[in-house]
Length: 166
Image (cartoon, rainbow, N blue to C red; front, side):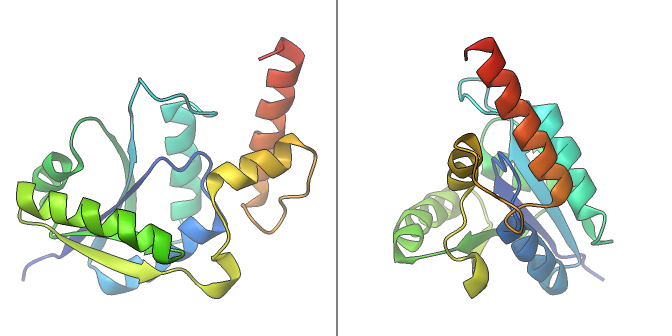
């Protein structure tokens, strides 16, 4: 029997309830799902790669066929290394589709890997990590947008940044 492996990539800075919804739905479609966070040192993130992997590992415990990994370099090379047949991407809006379609076409030109688009559940259609960070930075309530332990880590990190003047 062939095991059908999919990779669900992203920065997940931080992981949101919208991401978790996509992970679970992908887990229902594939034998194994690898939630893969890019470890690009040239990009500035709020959380370190290890912190993002820790948070992802915690939220993915709910799904027995989901594991978490970090990767560097091309996503398609990572997919080939893992034996993945698909890349899973959540779509919130038409604007996401336009960008993700271009990425899917590039990826398929680089490796034999399909891209599967999963539309975001309506309750998460507005949700983006960048918006969560911005709302939290200005003292807004992000409960219900991220898991409680992620919210606590987010508030702690933003408080640390304020105190350090960053």
